[in-house]
Amino acid sequence: MTRRVALLSGGVGGARLARGFEHLEDVESTVVVNVGDDDTFYGWSVSPDVDTVLYTLAGQEGPHGWGRAGDTSVLMDHLAGLGVDTRFRIGDADAALNLYRTMRLRDGDPLHAVTADLATMMGVRSTVIPATDDRLRTEVRTGPGHWMSFQEYFVLRGHRDEVAEVRFAGEATARPAPGVLEAIAGADAVVIAPSNPPLSVWPILAVREIATVVRDARRVMAVSPLFGGRALKGPADRVLISLGLPPGNAGVAAAYPGLIQDLFIDSADEADVPSLTGSGLSVHAGSTRIAEVEQATGLARRMMGLLGAAS
Amino acid sequence: MTRRVALLSGGVGGARLARGFEHLEDVESTVVVNVGDDDTFYGWSVSPDVDTVLYTLAGQEGPHGWGRAGDTSVLMDHLAGLGVDTRFRIGDADAALNLYRTMRLRDGDPLHAVTADLATMMGVRSTVIPATDDRLRTEVRTGPGHWMSFQEYFVLRGHRDEVAEVRFAGEATARPAPGVLEAIAGADAVVIAPSNPPLSVWPILAVREIATVVRDARRVMAVSPLFGGRALKGPADRVLISLGLPPGNAGVAAAYPGLIQDLFIDSADEADVPSLTGSGLSVHAGSTRIAEVEQATGLARRMMGLLGAAS
Image 1: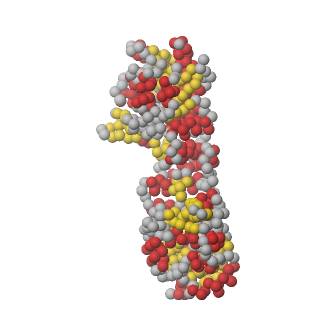
Image 2: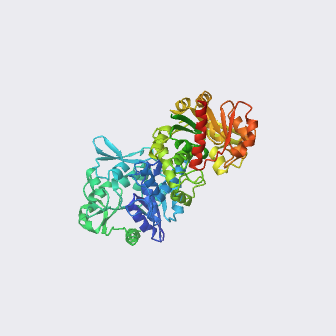
Image 3: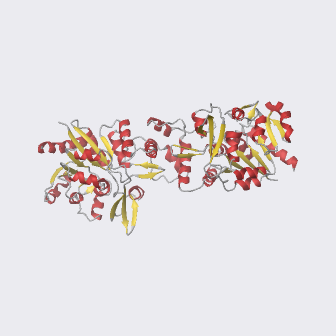
């Protein structure tokens, strides 16, 4: 029987798990992607997490967790020659995609429609939907009164600052993109990807109606982004702590209070299991390394197996 | 002694003559460039005539009268792959320049400042100023009530339509860019380039204060864009006629009524001289071919010589 999965995803980790689900023949997956990282560079509307998911599902992901495989940098080199700040480097094929999106948005098309068309052009089988078509921006506070955009924090400053607070500009009015609520409500399992909980998943849940329907979902499983207590890449472990959550997987669990029934953690963190099982949460230890398609497919299958056993 | 020249210029013809003046050591030239062709493509503010002048003076002009020599088309190819209409093709280096201008304009910098900075970066010796920083757009009527933008007429439809009327949107409020009036008023000679009179020069003169100061200038010389009664390229000859002006150089003279004292025409049109000399206009026949730098310098020198004789 076909299982329906709704995956809440940030960038790389979510994209890789999405690829695992896409490889399961009996799964129909919808990827609801974070747009809190969206920004404007060179006049283009960039949607880094949406693009990472699309590129990964199309087998075209760049080697560094962003951009496109084998891309050239002709345009950036010319811009740099004119003295333009090109620290946010975008390859030529990636630039064309961003420019395409920008032109469509300027013509009045909503982000979900542009994303769907890109997915079709790229031969992506999963349904990929941005969490919202509305403006929603993750901002972090790194010092007293010092707020900055996500991209300034993450790319320009290399996520070296301690994050004291996080907020989502636009959350009060952001509505879920068409299809998001239906995908979550109709899912046999809602899966929270191994993305940074506060910085990549909270901005999805910041859309009030999404949080509500996730809370009412049949089953919600999360995959921890930690390995031996640390994020593979990025600041997830540090951000959990600096925001006042417990360290390690207890922090991941605490980031989704009352929201998840299952937490998948890596074998390296098996020692966390006893401390996590108190609150009715089922904790599943095993490999959560998913860089390779086979690994991602294996984890996705384990998650679905759990579901099968429960039904 | 140093002569000051203010050259009113459209694209290729004006750019080439500007290059001639730039090669005369005893001439300080200011090129006042048409912006009626400016438009928006791919979200970029394009200024085709300004760029043609800059590229030509920098020795980087493309082979077809637009764009940049040796440019690549990586971005356009990617855009075409996404189904974007790329009939208005812009090479990668040219795209970077247009993107640079767009970002500066969006930051609030005026066109003349961006143009001056580009000229400096490109090592251009002449002063290059857009006629106006304000929005001024050449539009042509090709049928009853059927108005179109200049670029639609010229590039997309290949200037095949008969132009029944021309207008300059924004002319009522457009102010000369800083330096334009001073350059014209202080010039020993104002030179109207061999550009299309109605489509490339009229939009400069459509800025009321520019027309006034040209009318009061010490001496105004025009170079005809015709060779044997025809434009080398482009629709100048046809447009003069379809707008109701006389054919040939009589039409060029009639396009600048009461404005010019000297008209330079090509040797091929020497037969036009008698019919042109009636109204106090001095007509000078000789080669007006200026594709090569030496030819352009020769014509510029002839024009300056005339000035020397008169002073």
